[in-house]
Image (cartoon, rainbow, N blue to C red; front, side, top):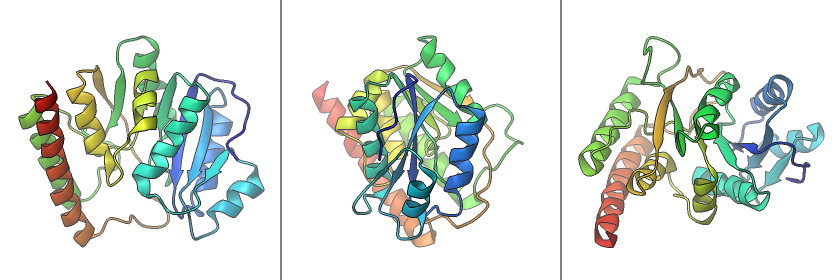
Length: 242
């Protein structure tokens, strides 16, 4: 598990929790269409057949002994990237919503030393294309985007996108410390406060074909309250430090 020989400087991190219906499609799409990249699937204590599929297919993977949550799973991937000395890491969800065809696009600015942190965004470029999520969640995304803009004077439109690429600096940072619950906005806040080069590029996302999101209305309310408070606390802590 997680021992495939390194052949690239780019690692694709694929967190997966109960993605038995989707994981083969996304890994096969990457290994067939984009074999120039390395990948690791982080099985986050799945209770379905995800672990059996990963083992049977011989996919490069790490099995978490318990469910760590999305933040813990991603941090596990970053720790692997740091240990193997990758220069760039790309996050792609295990549900197939992120199209691997855009990996080269989000990696290119880092390779060209034009960015440290690249976000694959649903809300820049042609907003008529691709899957945008529900109306309720789009409202929440706009709220968090506005909150970060007010606190940091930096506008990021798609603050909850899990499709991201980062350089070696952030691999090291996230391997040591990564937000646990709903980490995407908090990780962006951290990057903004570190004054690093953040770039948002348009990507077209796909709707989940099977299974369902773990985010329901109750969890969405909890999400908004918790993340908003965490963002404010994070901003205050950076203000004190600087």
